[in-house]
Image 1 (cartoon, one colour):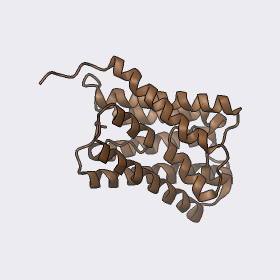
Image 2: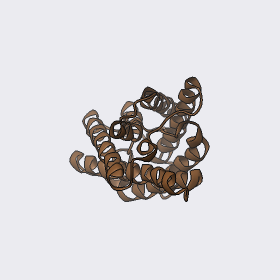
Image 3: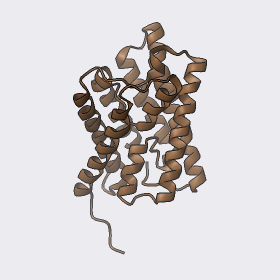
Image 4: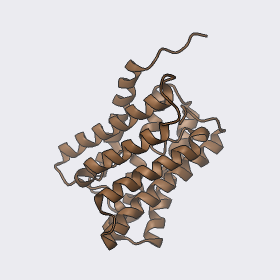
Length: 225
């Protein structure tokens, strides 16, 4: 994973769409498959989300930065690690890909459990706070491995994928472990499940901003030109 990726804006947007599609299709697909078969369980679903992020970060991190998440892109934008035009292209690619992926799950896998839509199983205040903490953790780790020259680059994909898996193991039964407005919006639109969607659209953005600011305090100073 790198701060913005080395591809053109168009190539970066394509990479973001492929990665986000894979995240939603495989991750939410796993939720639907588990609802149908009971084979995966919450641990299997969490590992699936972590693994798909791990492999897609490794595959296209050098092209787009491998955000696959509007909250992560926001963190990079406010930290001045990505230009506004590329951030907008990322957001469009992520959101469109998430909706297409969720619709594809419904078409090819099944429409059980609202296509994997995120729904709180705790009170709304707790759900919002949990989602803020999850996004904070994800962005904090991402900023560390992607923007700090002291951090080892070889383990970036593992670090981010493991963060997704750990967050999902903890919070999947509580909030669905959204962490990502695109991941939540795609199944919501494709299934018509809009209950408490505001939590999953806003809390990750709040957590991302806090995570970016927190790591900004720890990041190594930029080398002088």
